[in-house]
Image 1: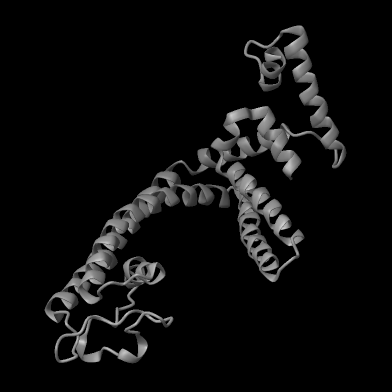
Image 2: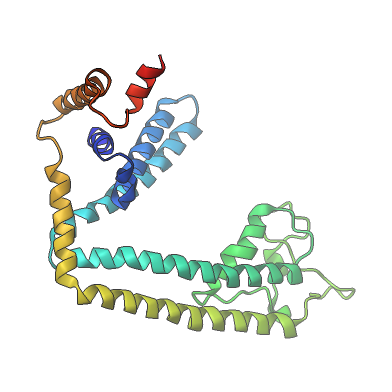
Amino acid sequence: MGVISAGSWYMNGNKYFSDPWNIMDTLGIFYFITGIIFRLHSSNESSWYSGRVIFCLDYIIFTLRLIHIFTVSRNLGPKIIMLQRMMIDVFFFLFLFGVWMVAFGVARQGILRKNEYRWEWIFRSVIYEPYLAMFGQYPDDIDGTTYNFDRCTFSGNESKPLCVELDADNHPRFPEWITIPLVCIYMLSTNILLVNLLVAMFGYTVGSVQENNDQVWKFQRYFLVQEYGSRLTIPFPFVIFAYIYMVMKKCFKCCCKKECIEPSICCKYHLSE
């Protein structure tokens, strides 16, 4: 697969990375090589575990890459185009949601806690917990009457979130008339407004592709046939020598016969010498 990807990159040049499937191939090969390097370093257990984690991520990439096969189907091909365009809609949704999430998370962290220095727990309080609140998980540390001090730490030496700031009577200092309405407004904005906006964007994207369903499928099938038609029919591992021959032939034509308008990389190196 690496040889085929390298050959496609050589023949297509910079256009190779304009296709998201080619980007997935490149990432998959990169993770595979990185995982092998970590597995070969068997000096400690952490290297073996890091290699296993990288291989698991690489498995996800190669498995999702199989979706490209279904583009030849008249029914599933347009659905894949819908998924690709819906990912663009998700990107714009995450941009808007990130503004709400950071605004609520920073304000919530500043109201509840003081001098939290552990960056991992700051991330959980500012990003992770507001993200879960979008799916309906209500934060349990904004109500002073039900706050549980056994699930937090005052010193920060334990693997627990930092306790909220206390007043002179050892009660939570934060005003509930601010924290509870703040969470309600945040969940109302994200769960109802933003999520429904995303659903509306999905509906428009699916409708626009569905109108040209047959044309989209024909274009995708044409590009897939063109991709496989441009590959060499020589089996592996003999295809490696074929690509080496193609590179040497192109460099020979460019440098010796001067048939190239713009010299390639190997020709530039030859002329510089």
